Image 1: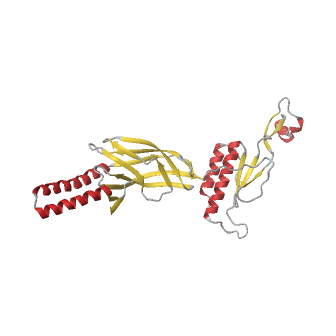
Image 2 (image 1 turned 30 degrees about the vertical axis):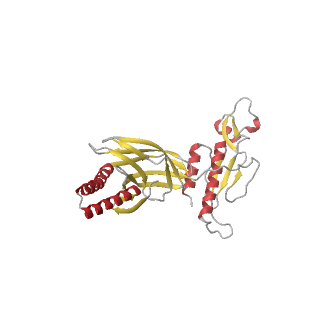
Image 3 (image 1 turned 45 degrees about the vertical axis):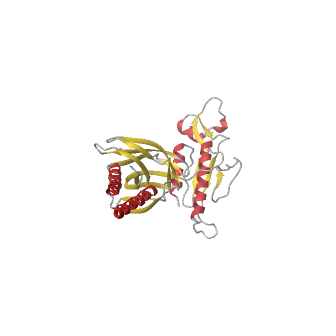
Length: 313
């Protein structure tokens, strides 16, 4: 990584002098001193040429950053600490001039996400749009909103590292991180608390019409009397159960909220239990101090529970 020194910031742009640029300026100063002391016209010509390099570097880098826009297409949701696909598009709206050696970086040094690999566009023709697939990794659950990004270039000579901040609208929801967890046995019953589950047991699943081979003991007499046809009770499979995942974000003794790092651990544990139980085919309900969700095992139910956990505090 190129080290930089002497940063100059102005409005939405920054200009940093690179190590190579610092060396070039030191040579420029030496040539200037030599020209003044000796009065050699050749040294004056070299000095003028070196100064023109700096001017040309500033003009070309500004032209390269001019009239560029960035668009991103992220999935509707991500899991924290897990990479997700991101399509990044860089458009050059200039009519004649292409752009060279453009990097896209976060607007601030500390961001709740990372992009891999770092977006780099070597050549963007005039009026063209270049698309690159990337992997976006969010570090925290919740609402991820990116409003700006930085375009950076060292073009053409690498003497300066110029950046420009431009709008960049990207929004997605980050679900809690999913980790491997030990799932409860079907006969195991948990106590209410954080990160524990409780089986609901075998319950009535549906009522359907009587079919040959059904036991008379399973006939639902009340429904049969209403419809005039025999209807039987259908129970859940013996191999699949319904579980309630308890999430408690307060200390049981003081009834005060637990520290933030403990909250994140408990939310991640609850999300992991829900995720793996539903993947196994079980019905799951999330219970908090305020309310309890319905039971379900569908993908839509999983997304609803993850969405709830993404914003719970």
